[in-house]
Image 1 (cartoon, one colour):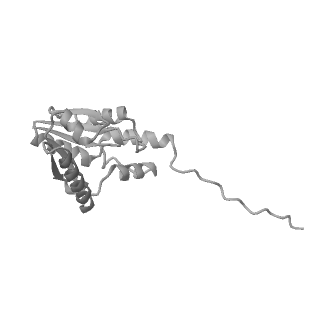
Image 2 (cartoon, rainbow, N blue to C red; image 1 turned 90 degrees about the vertical axis):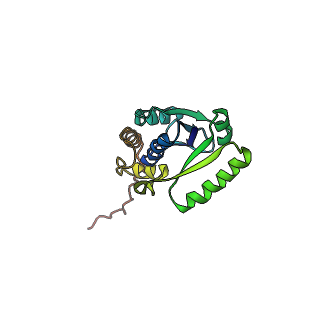
Length: 176
């Protein structure tokens, strides 16, 4: 059985990697499909994200990487996948993901959504959170694969997260 794990992966986190590795144990083949979403401004290009994922998933023989810019269910049908793989962190994820699963099922009853609960140590983790921490100089090496931590550091050392504006000083008057 083929599963598609869709997402923006901007960047891939250890939580994503956990779902990928567990998915590879459950399914004959897992396709990590990086979405091209014109409504988002990604930090990393599609090519950079694919390279990041490739580097940290080399040990998985039944994994394939791809990109898509269609409806997820349309992509899954094109790839002859029977499953959309999704990770759940918190209750709000469940509400959104359940809505998406029902919507996808209404578009194609041949594609099922399978949810994997995120491992406890990654239940708080999101790509947005990682980018914010990295932007302000925080350590992210415990949240993302090593190659991604290096790229995030390089990215944010080139562009400082904020500009310090000097505070104007009051003019001084000479004392007689």
